[in-house]
Length: 214
Image (cartoon, rainbow, N blue to C red; front, side):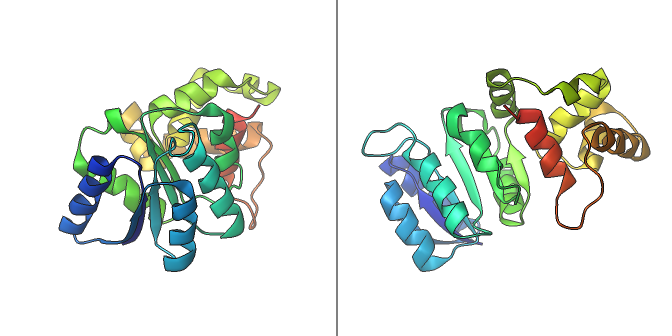
């Protein structure tokens, strides 16, 4: 993969460069602020960008806002947020374009390098990958719609795992269910949320957005 890194910590930025290069990927740019991130993505068109949320000058949410702007201006721009913090104010907005190719992992919760690389690949491939803690905090920061009240506890559990970016087979393994059972739960969730089959919309993404909807 061709990768852009935006991280204001010199040690972490250089560590990511060396790790990814060692694993056979090409880091086309490694920058330390949001303005440089936008220039790097526009100039190099990477497969995916790794973006810290809190960067200069205010160290609040510059990286997240830059990611939202990039995905608005460059459809298909894949972004993996990699931060110590969960910023709920803009995170749901980042997911709201329904396009996939976005991830949000917490630095302190990545236990294995292989898990990080797998998440990066999945985001590059157009999937949505969310740390369970991110999902939990987004969920608690928003109110549920009336439609979610119609879901059974098991359907809510399945939808929560969908929000983490898990496939039906991964959900089946996690909940010790058959693949057919998970497919039935997912179909039921789509029906209860009013999401009919559509060529233009990804129903999994729409269901997750409904789950996080304010």
